[in-house]
Image (cartoon, rainbow, N blue to C red; front, side, top):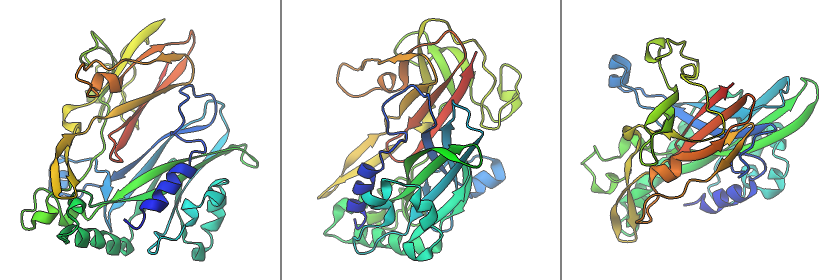
Length: 357
C-alpha cells in the first residue's frame, strides 16, 4: 500500500510516551489507551437498540475518539489534542510520519493552523467527535480496485487503511505546560458498506470482516486459571438496573465496586464476552488461506502496587485468553487505580479504569 512505509516509520518514531511503554506503574501523566467508536446507523440499532461498537469507519461516518489519560500527579489542567495528516499519494513523508517533527510532536498543533502543512486538528478533549471527510473515498475505492485485480489476490483480505492519529496530552496549571506526552492511534478506514461476507455479488469483496471494538464486561477474581469466573470486583453497565450494587451506572459504563480489592497478592482477570471475539480471513499470494479468531489481550497498569506475569496455560503453544487477560497483582496498602486496556490486534480497543480503596 502507498502508506505502508510511512506508517511503519510513524510507528517507530512515535514511541515518545504513549501506551507503547512497558512500565506498568503509572506515576506521571500518561496516555494509556485510545479508542475509535464509529456510530452504528443501522435500523436495528436505531429502532431496536441492538447497536454494534464499530471500530472501522468510512467516508461520512461519525467517529467518537476517546483517550484514557492518567493524571496521578493531579495537574490542574490537562489539554488533549488530536491530530492527523493528509495521506500521501506519492510516498512522500508527511509531518505525522517525519522523525524530525515527531521528536517534538506538540509542533503538530501549531502546524495544524496552516492548511498547507497537511496537518489536520481533529479536536481537543479526552473525548471528541469527528466526521470522516468524503475525500477519503478515493483511497478506499483504490482498495476495492486492488482487491478486484486478479494479480493481487492477497488484497482481498486487507481492504482497509490504517490512518495514523496522534494524541498529545499537555499538563500544567493553565498558564504553563510542564508535561507533554503523546501516543499513536490507528483509525481503520474500510469501504465497509460496499464489501463484506454478507455481499455475495462479488467474490473478490467477500473476505474482509468489518471490525468492532472488544469490551471488558467485568473485572473478576477467578476461581481457577481456566476461566474468568469467580468473585466480581466491578461490572460494566448501561443503566443503574444492571448493577447488583444498585448503581449508579457511571458515565463511562461501570457500576460501583461490588467488593473490596483483596489485600496482598491476587490473580485478576478481565471478562471478555464471547461475542466480542471475531473470526476474520487472511490471504496469501494465491488468495484466501483460511480464517482465524482474534485473541484479545489486556495490558494492565496501576498507580501503585506490582504485577507478575501469568504463564501461557495452553500446552499446544497457542496463546489462550487466560494468558492474555489474567494478571497477578499485589495491591498497595492504600488507595490505587487499576487500568485494563483490551486490544484485539485489529485496531479495536476498550478499557476499564477503576479506583479501589
